[in-house]
Amino acid sequence: MKKKIHNDNLLLILLITLLGVAMTANTVSAATATQTAKGIRVYVQNKEIHPRAASVIQGGSVYVEFRSVVQALGIKFKYDAAGKQITATSEDATFKVDLKTKKTFVNGSPYTYDSNVPMVIGSGADALVAITLYSETDYISADYDKTNKIVKVYEDLHGKPKKADLKKIQALIKAHYQTLDGFQSIDKLEMESWREYTVMLADVSFRKTETELLDRVEHVTLEMEHKPDASWTIHNIEINNTEYLDYTSLINKEVNVPAADQMAIHELLAAYCKAIKDKDVDAELALQDPANLTAGDEKSLRNLREWSTRNFDLEYTEEQAVIVSYSANQAVVYWVCTLQVKKDSSKLTERLYSLTSVVKNKDKWYFDSNEEIALGSEVIE
Image (cartoon, rainbow, N blue to C red; front, top):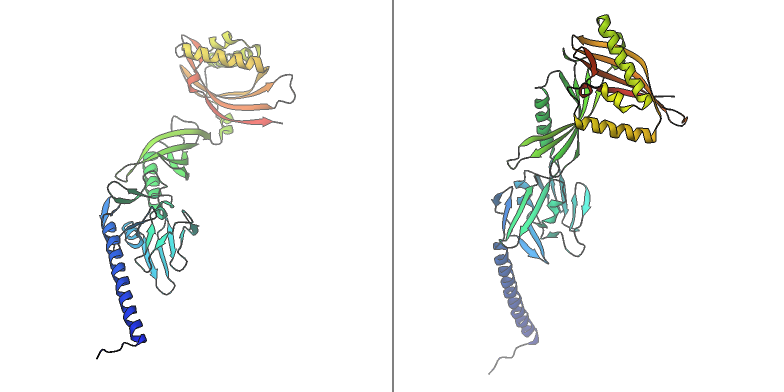
């Protein structure tokens, strides 16, 4: 006699059968995902790491385990199981992954690469994140080599320097300037930009030496190069402006000069003012030291005077001239002049302060234009 199967037993058998099929399908799906993930290798700072959770590709995006990557970068990792949050912090970057909402934050700001693409896969401490999350910082980059199936996460040499890098840069710049005579201090050092070179702006103070008359501050731009071995070098230094301190005190620094030379030097200065007033380029050129005057200098001066003659009617007037340094064939003059555009009341008058070098050549005094230093200027109301 055949046993009768009740409806409830039939439903139970059907349920078990379907569950077995589903489990088999999940096993196949998981195996396929694992096989795909096993083909992806992960490198952090050029060293291969082995994440606890396998990397995957989903919807064209690459996902790697967050914990292993940030720890390999030297960033402190924390998992809050109760709050379902993952955080990673360093002195240069902060990350937060909210596993409840699947939202991610970098340096306190929400980050979404594509609203249609999830940033987080999985849950718990081994959650995966899209590699674009790392590149949201200013100094970390992440790439995927599709051909070789390699994820690379690294500190970009052209990225923003970390705080530790800035300390290295500061030490390097200070070491450079300590080799220069008269160096006193670096009063300001700040980063302006970064990419191929990290550009730093600095104010560097110097005390006057035996051959100099004034303390000064050099406002400089330094290009710093980040080498592949993570070291730093100074690529280039450009002095944007030199600020000479307390230069008006030079009026009281007059030195003793033989009467004949003193008269000749003052006549040279007066002749220059007259040449400017008369727009006489030839007379101005005749006052330049022939030993240093080149064809290029002469051409530049003629072009400058031609331009100024077309546009301005200049009056150059000497206010003060004090010889502050003297030897038999060379002297330095602290020279204060006013420059005014005549016949135009709308144009301001400027007072110009300079240290002008003059040299004696065959018993005649000339300007040594290569050594002239502009100290400063002010507008006369």
